[in-house]
Image 1 (cartoon, rainbow, N blue to C red):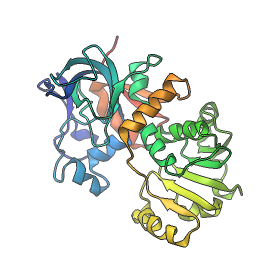
Image 2: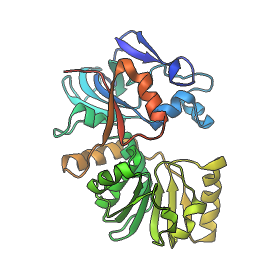
Image 3: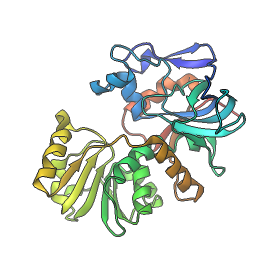
Image 4: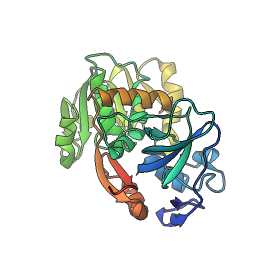
Length: 322
């Protein structure tokens, strides 16, 4: 089978398209023919092993798994003898933050991981692109116990995490202010944002509005900049640890002061996130945003594009052309 192989950490150029042995599912695994995958921030972090701490999960010296890819959608081709939840022919999608090997024509995954059957109302491409960003958005939003009517600001509202966060915050009844670039204003509105600030035209930190929750979905702002925008008991969460990992310090100190707080992004329960997002998709309450599509053979270009940090929503890798 064809697969993208990564034998060492580095820039996208270290990736190679190779013919490798097709995997065989073990007793509690399923074999999936991959129809679509993605390249996302998590994949780019694994590829370059940044931040360094990621190496403790993906391999200290070199990648433990030479085939990257954290999310996918496809069809089960075979099941292990002790698999009870799935059968051959099931359409499925799934995610794992440490990598699944989904940048390949086939992959295996244990049936008890973040895997489930696909909603009938979406395509393979949409399914593959609906998980990673939504998982990290949901993991952060679910920690702050949002209540209907509370005010939320989402900085970087057009990326995979941000576009999901806007929709999830609206689902929980929040008044959402989205911060994005000029070209994505209409997108943010279509996702449910009540107010949109174009960061190219205005400094959102000088708007004067107070928020119960500020979510920096791209890791480009800071608690220091956003502190004055928070309500006295407001919460700031970033998808990044911040300059010199400052958010770790703030997360330790701010609870002691019993005022405005910083929470660290939590990896959360991947299976729970997947099932929750599936429910929203089936109810028509979650929209997948896709920026670009690349065939597997052009995955290096996909990584380069994602690393620019300017993508809108998700970048999809296609493995089936029909």
